[in-house]
Image (cartoon, rainbow, N blue to C red; front, side, top):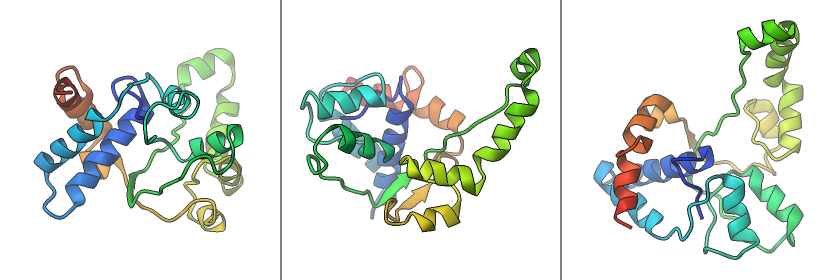
Length: 189
């Protein structure tokens, strides 16, 4: 199971990770990535609109053989189902899925919360906040916090969307826009 990359950030990350994985294999290139991702999506029985829906379809309804998802979903699945109900496989390569935050100046000014919003923005990347993320199953961005939680977050080779695809705008345009590569590959299903 993979959520629909046209409607889900989780789906876009899974698609892009699979694409980059295929490109980094011996003999890998865009043609190999098209073939690999095409085969991968040919095996997806349902394209839920979001990651939680894909998790529910897989874990509760028993649809599909494999679920590609964010690693914080593992803790949620284990909390809801028997801890050892599912085998967890850590990929050799994955895309870094950031949890970006921003202050929307116009809205913050309108509500008089600019100072508070900026304080949270500063706090978000602090070691203290990163430790809270780690405690809740979200891979921390802070290297020291990540090392302190190494048992929970196995080492993986990580790339960013910018490294693999230039930018989110380029990835969106090439892969997920109407008529883009995802549409072309999925139409063959």
